[in-house]
Structures are given as structure tokens and as C-alpha cells.
Length: 124
Image (cartoon, rainbow, N blue to C red; front, side, top):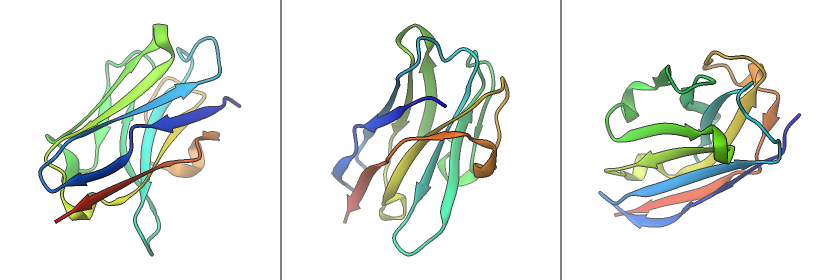
């Protein structure tokens, strides 16, 4: 397993932006596909976005396609989630996750390492 720590969450107004970061403890993340998930208050954890080991392939839920961008910098062992045009429906705790494979997945159970999460609150 790899240790993951998210940062960049906070309080933002509707239409605002945040850039989440996920830093890792491992020397390389090239062996990992990475994902972002979120848990809204009172709801189950949901998939948001994922990126393949080299960044060539990405996947998003329909509601964030366009406003959100997932990216990675393997040299810095960091994964990012740029979130634009935020709405109250994006309010949640956001989690970074890693799976030991090259390819993306929307299934949380396929990820073996998780960060503690960073809260995002979008106020109207």
C-alpha cells in the first residue's frame, strides 16, 4: 500500500474553483492508476474521476465532465483534481485512491490505498 494525503479543499462560493492535490509516500506512482472519489453528506461514496498510470487515459462521471480535470505529475508523485464552476452539489469529502494497475476503474473496491480525505464546501 501507499500512503496518500489530500489537500486543497475548503470553502468556496458557487462558480468558484479549487485545485485538489494528492501526494504520495512512494518513490514512484508510475505503477498506479489513480482516482478521486467523494462522499456527500448522508450519501455513499461515489466515483468522480480517474487517470491511467501515464495520464493518457482519463474517466469522469458525466456531471463533472468539462468543469473538472484530473492530472498527474509522476515526477512529483502527485495527482491533481482541478475543479471549476463548482455547485452546491459538489459539496463533499474528496478522497484520493490508488490501484496497482495501469488502467482506470470506477469501482472503489478495486483501489487498495486511500487518503483520509479533504472537505469541499460550496456555498450559495
